[in-house]
Length: 201
Image (cartoon, rainbow, N blue to C red):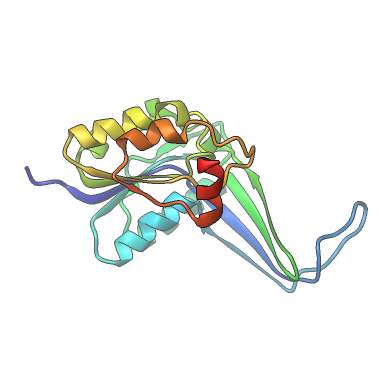
């Protein structure tokens, strides 16, 4: 059976506000200046999808954005990358997730999950999922509503003939719950060294 997509990426979509050239993190009540700023498409899943599309793979993404300017920026950026975003859920009354990245002498991230936190199994378009040769699930710990059903989503993809991959990213709660269950339906696991150490104990 011919599949419509080479890759379908499932998971986090947000904007990244990058503040660069910061001398150091401010202490309470203090202010520091940044030399530059950028507002870009972010989220490990969205970035993965864009990279796949740039490699010439027919790529679609399943995720959720708000009905706000940030959500519009995400959808426009995905389409410019060549990613099919037709099945991305738009929640009119919710805010799109955002990560503020501060880089300079130190580097840190502050994230508001927004729609990433409420993206759940009911938001996953199963027709698009089953139309993939490969399904990648990213942002495991940021898509909190999807996490309990991650294995089920991956199993659905596998039953439809797709290979699967998982990139958990870092767990902000440092609990690492649910990964081992999801791994039962994963062909390729993509943790970095620090994540692998936490997951394996």
